[in-house]
Image (cartoon, rainbow, N blue to C red):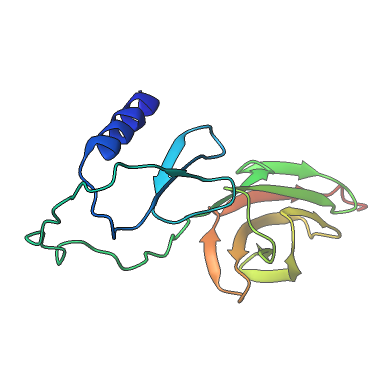
Length: 172
């Protein structure tokens, strides 16, 4: 469908009047095999030959003030979530060890880091991944949360808080 439209446009461009002092027209195929027409040459482009003496009248009544041509910064939304342990899980480990895993969507860029929060306080330094291994956690209830940090250390995503219970056998 797109190729048919491009061929129609090419036909109109070849038949339509062109002023001899106008810019040249170039054509090439992009990475997807679609024909591209432009007034800027590039390697591999071919010049489209037009008939001399044809003239296109430019329209001067087009109001371009309504067009927003300012570049827009693409702000990508990130989501971070703790996948293990599940909320309200009981961890039975006499050494107090727990493995914490998370996921980030979409994949985070190089330079991003993940800060693990344990009971409202940062646990260790931020990591370049979302897998944590904690040792010697006291028995009882604990809350964890993950923060996704950008290159400047700014928080760009926060996970939901997860509660887990550490169960350690007593020696008494």
